[in-house]
Image (cartoon, rainbow, N blue to C red; front, top):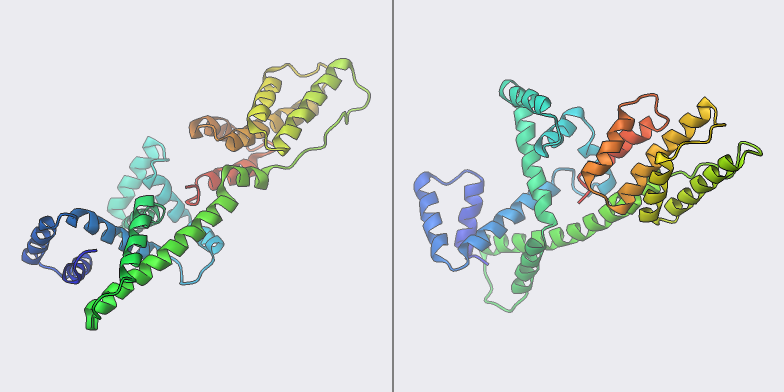
Length: 303
């Protein structure tokens, strides 16, 4: 860990309390240390992550944090902009707004810092560094007094809290935003079996295949479910199907293929290609579900 004098100067630098000469001297002192650059980077990660943890009131639940994260249109818009998820035209609209709207420009700046802090929370190298600092602090050493001792203790406390938060955040993300968790949340098995009465052989075969694909999705055999749903999607429906039947089964196939691909962990571009087609049709049976799914797939918790 860096000497306490340098740590205090780094903190002063973050607070904007160092002048240019003091900054240069600090830079030279850090350059003389064999691990100065690495320790400085870890220091900045620590405080970026610490700032991120205070984005919400202390003790707020992770679920509440997620709601607050996406509570306003501007916050979502800023997040999409930072992640490059907007079209070129909309990116340009945001660039113009940054110039003309200081409060929105500040929101963007805060969002970048927040994203960086949460990114540091899940960085394995950083977490190992935190554990090393905590271990070093527990070694018998001469007792320090005053501000330096308090600063170092603050760093160790922060490291301990961050390690716990990383563990909790990982658990929350896995329980609520993993591929499997998202599919479980959005999937509802439709009525299966031949609900259209005694049909022709062609109808029975189609409905049997439909039911088999859904059973695979329910059992989370996502790869095989994807294959069977896509096979049905390329197959001509039975000639006896009425217009309402055609819409019901086609809409369900669209939605089921999306969920199966999410569960299978297919590339994002492949999932979004079909998902956005559903969102583009407000008459689609699963339009509302698709909009909600798009939001969850873009959530911060999707690490």
